[in-house]
Length: 253
Image (cartoon, rainbow, N blue to C red):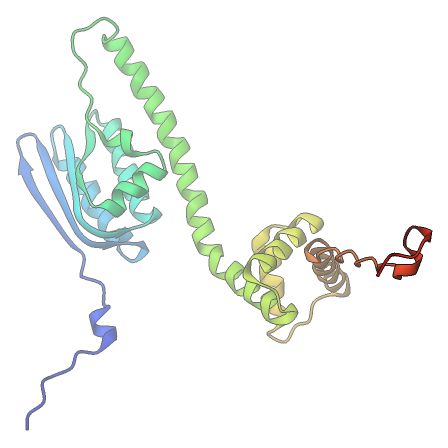
């Protein structure tokens, strides 16, 4: 009896390949990105967007409706392309986006940067006003790029913090929340970055013990946590007096 092939779970979970298409649309180019956009795809996407901005007359439009995953690396690609386009008097817009990309742009407040705003002949839309708005937009772009750098650093240090939290949980029988509180307390008490504290704890289980001062800080932080987590002892119930002593007189049967 023949057996039907069984697909391996890992094969089913494999991410779809990244597909990038570029097509002309009037004086603009439409760039369609399908698949996952993470750090492994950042270089390829940066290259395509840079060439597309350079080839277009008025700018590029992005179709991200098929982008299944997008992190800060992808957002950095979009912001970089927008900065290059603005420097050349062009624009970058997002015509369509998957729910995940929409959430990323909404949380980071970058969605308005990729909507095409045309200036009519209304008052306040002269060349001076347009130049002023572009300068303000460039300043805002730089601030957003700084935030993206911070987010990327947080993504890189997160695995260290997770490992350190696990070490505290296993060593002191703490919950995940309590272990996080201890880690934050260590960072604040020693005026040390959270990632550096986490790295010390990880190193301690790899053959290099903590310094005596660091051990005392850990013990103090755990003790302080237990002091705040220990509930007060419940009040002891009062024992009733014997019947014959209540009120100094004997109660009737």
